[in-house]
Image 1: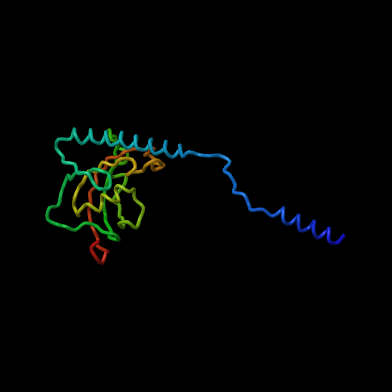
Image 2: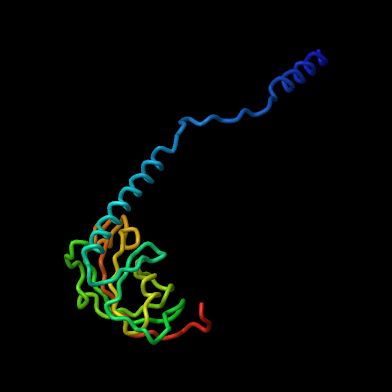
Length: 183
């Protein structure tokens, strides 16, 4: 009897222990949401850039430069003597305004007051942060920012809505060098 119980126990252990089976996903997704999102963003960017190109083409007075960062700018007042631009950690003082591509004022320069900003150490929308690095003290520059360079999908939770490209006239008043080396 003891031998039969032992044999039954060994048979139970032998047949009950099998290799674990891999779990199958409940749903299979093809990534279509991501692909649709990519296509929507490409179309949005193309529409915004076409509007910006229209503005540039209509403006026969100013010469616009395409930046590596994906925005355009034109000097209203340019410093041809100095070569000093702000670097990481430098403190700048500047004024700016914001308009939509139709020229409607969103924020007046007086409304925003003078801004003191430490380069790349504080919050500022991406396009303006990069644009300030191109400027020299005393320069006045007009920037054309597609929405992804400005406030993007979220806006500013105040006056700037979703996916609004912006025009900004920026005056760089002062650069206070804090960096110890040129980057």
